[in-house]
Length: 248
Ligand code: UDP
Image 1 (cartoon, rainbow, N blue to C red):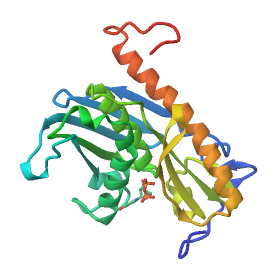
Image 2 (cartoon, rainbow, N blue to C red; image 1 turned 45 degrees about the vertical axis):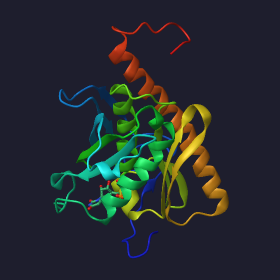
Image 3 (cartoon, protein in one colour; image 1 turned 90 degrees about the vertical axis):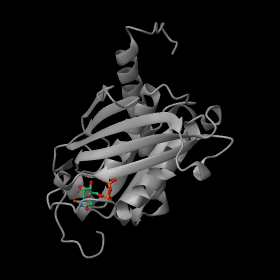
Image 4 (tube, protein in one colour; image 1 turned 180 degrees about the horizontal axis):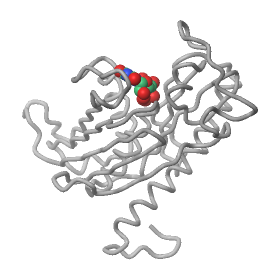
């Protein structure tokens, strides 16, 4: 258990409190192109997490001195709405949101072909409307889809999920009770098709063997999420883009 936390039984008769098995994701719902004024957008639900990602750009970068003459600058703002959590969250940026914005940008950066758009900015906004742990992973999944929806050239999508340890067991996709009272939480993001990890963080402690098992579990789940992301994009564009069998 993480230090200073009250002990709660999180696994009963081999099931988690919400009835999931150890290697089960929460239900995922994806909608692409939900915002009229954004160049690309996505609504993403992961269990009780509800997030929206909006992408603007590539557009002229201001201030000019911050421009990169060779490539686009990607900006990422993660924001948790005051009403998204049980205890009202104070509005505005804090250390946590600055950290999550930074690691999320770095998780997406390797797939964005920034060299196509020198001197421009690509703005990615992630708004957490309802939160139940794993918001950074939901935000990365949503942002990745919103970037594709904006038509920004990308090498691939990025998929993300957390694994953790509760009551001594390695489990997938922790919810808030599990995150608060568990022993460890490890968010992962990856380019599923190439198995390239672009984000790996850990809060708490894992043995080496647990870490390896957890990483494998997360990587498998990222493949599942990738298929859902891809299906949501194909669904959105199937009328305008001809996607043949085994292509796309
Ligand atoms: N949380 C909260 N208030 C805060 C920050 C976090 O209630 O100011 C909750 C929220 O449910 C969040 C969870 O704690 O999803 C886990 O937060 P963490 O920092 O681990 O990030 P996340 O798992 O959401 O990426």
